[in-house]
Image 1 (spheres, rainbow, N blue to C red):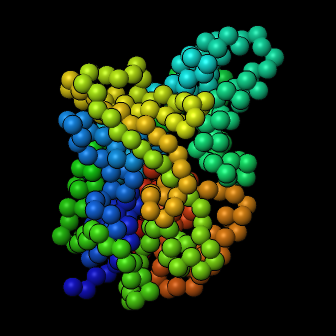
Image 2: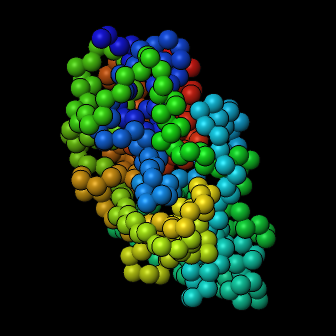
Image 3: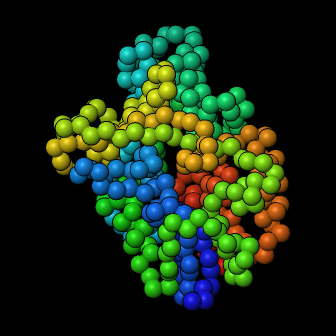
Length: 333
């Protein structure tokens, strides 16, 4: 069969592109190296509980266009994200706000900033980013704000929630089009043999055979546990800055709003990407920007090759940003 477009990677970016192009009457071949669609947003039922295989994904946006687009394929629940952080035996709100300061007894302290940095951010960030911690671009740290209010909300976006029946079901609905063919377990991209436009969402350094060296990524070692009780902890997510390797524990029932007698938690242990685990986070530093730009220059020389998403663009995108970029690119093609 002759296709109009080839898309490499069936994550959020690739699936959005496939749906939009197919809706315009274009035939699309969507190739995915894993055994499932959805990328790192993939979720599945584990012991009666809908869990996120690659860690919690809470959708939030102020972009009405993105929100309306996704609502064509799923209803969203009304979950508002709630995160606590353990500080010297106390669970306080994250982002740090006036309630957190009061609970820690720091209202009259002259060293609030130093205390919060040392006990909340420093060790957590060292675990999350490893040897790259000291070189990170400031944009990474701006993702975790400090609030000068009493609002306990983690996100302040207008639209928030999770797909009622899960992200995987949403993706299946997006791909339900006769113009889209999906092939899983495809390890070879075959981009350079293609005579049709290619949207590439994978690692850009891998695309060019690491000819300039490997870009670093951080990964996660995630362990799931079932507990024969309705709930394991009092909050959806609890961060642990000062435990040796553990960064957070997530309990998914809070997010999925399921009603069952057991519960599933996941424990996250950050680690370096080693080529066999999953590349979760690009690592923005001065050195990696230089290396990425060398690969980007190679990509720019290839006609009809489009880079899209976290790995291909080596940027720390939120989910709504990825959808917006895909929608805009699809409108241009």
